[in-house]
Length: 404
Ligand code: CTP
Image 1: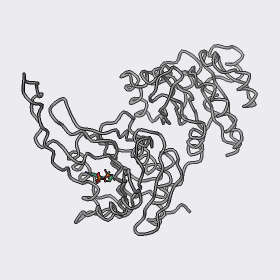
Image 2: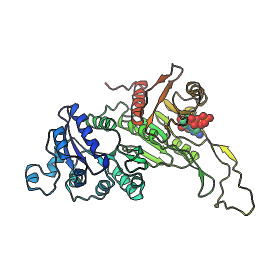
Image 3: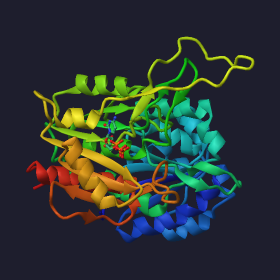
Image 4: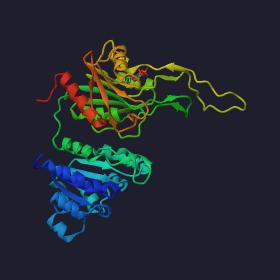
């Protein structure tokens, strides 16, 4: 990694102090880091500490005569291999999405032609606000890459999505960006399902589950980075579409099946969606109303199609490799083996979703990996992005596509 340069833009979130740790870890790997601080970030992290750790002067002002003479904002971005914004506030996302350039950080982000990696950190309500969602969608479309935010307790006392990802996750992504991953799956087509499904009760009510789509989305992104041409069929989720992937948005299991069949033929199918097993037999056309004295309506459920089984047993277009997940609460291995046999898929990634495991919706996963009848492999707990990378490496190896 020596000789690689990162331009780190630190904006004004409480997590700004984590920039120090990030700089330290990047420097350890021989990466040169030059830091830019916004005015708000300056209140939260010391420019002096950043300068000491990075070994370079910290840049703050757009209209500084000396800075413009010595190191203009164009040069700052030109001399970097990668621009990283961490932590990124809702404010800088709004500026980036709208092309504002009223300070050094935003001017660099508008002027740069280098890849940009953004690690947001903000209050969960700000993250979920429609304005932030709009900005995010636009930035993803512009090719900006996101890492996080993670979920958990926030400095403001709230809980939810909005924490800056841990420095090790960020470093991983930066390293991956700097040393482009080999593309062992180039020329192959992949299909991934992700997220929950919504099964309508009436026009406003539905049955759903707690799946966040994070694992499936991470797998789609990792397959795309490995060179595959990826279609992601996603149920309703609150996370952005992964870059470099064709994403088809669906609601119900039946829509999901249709979109998957439309994507065939593919070489690889990974079913990570938490598809509802049942749907209301006959959803009402109009909103169900409470009638005075009448008993609550009874919901009669019918079984949904099993997408994984359909793909694994497809009569004419079975993918070369079909991978499923198994969310279990009892004897993980026995249940996962039975599920693999029942569904006819090649591999199963089983995870424990007992209360307290925090897999559904969480950032990390602990996998028991089953390939055919081979002995089960227990993967240590790791971020979902890392699970995705590991799975993709296995897929490449199984298809004889190991990187040279
Ligand atoms: N799956 C699917 N279509 C369904 C149900 C499940 O494609 N209608 C896929 C999931 O994407 C996952 C795997 O099947 O890859 C296992 O899902 P899981 O919910 O754990 O298993 P079920 O088949 O629902 O069995 P059970 O709920 O009885 O454990």
